[in-house]
Length: 241
Image 1: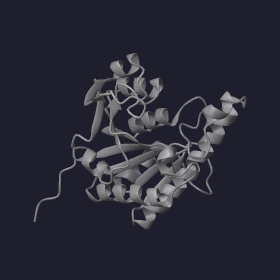
Image 2: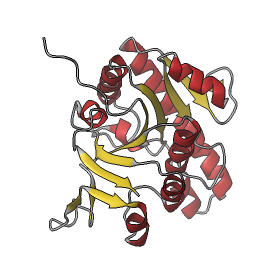
Image 3: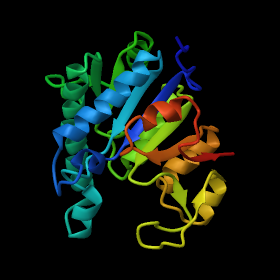
Image 4: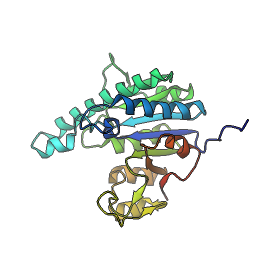
């Protein structure tokens, strides 16, 4: 019997985009994708890793896009935050079907569907081995769910942000559009900001830089990648000091 791999991190914050839940669809939530994410999260939960998740809402509604078309930015952002709650509930359902105890915690109060965000209570859930899914971003307009992920990671005292994307790391340019783009194994926060790399928005990167919180960017679409990232395997790019 081989011993189970030792996790490199004790508490992590997984940042999922709303688009991640779409799979190959143009809109909404692909149940197969939600199930695969839930299985991957259940696997690391089984290793004793405490897992918090922040999810975006871009598969349902993008506040930035709506405000660009003339909608009031604050209103559009609130609508985007509500979309993230829909995703959080879908993810909770998928996780609980895998027998992973989950709590949805939201920054905008809606007690009928989720708990309000209370930092100490959320930490307690993690300590008790529950997955905590944070919905509604930071609860404030003009802040992205990337910034919400950085903020919640600090508040939960996470060891790392796992930024799940469609590509296997951070590249010099968009690898889909530019075949000559090369991947960074490690890069500093300042280099990300100076080179304008689309890892997370500048507010989120600055917050991580000020608090020395590493960000690991990896491909979510490869099953088992979350577990590999947790075990410290080089599955993507790391942003650190």
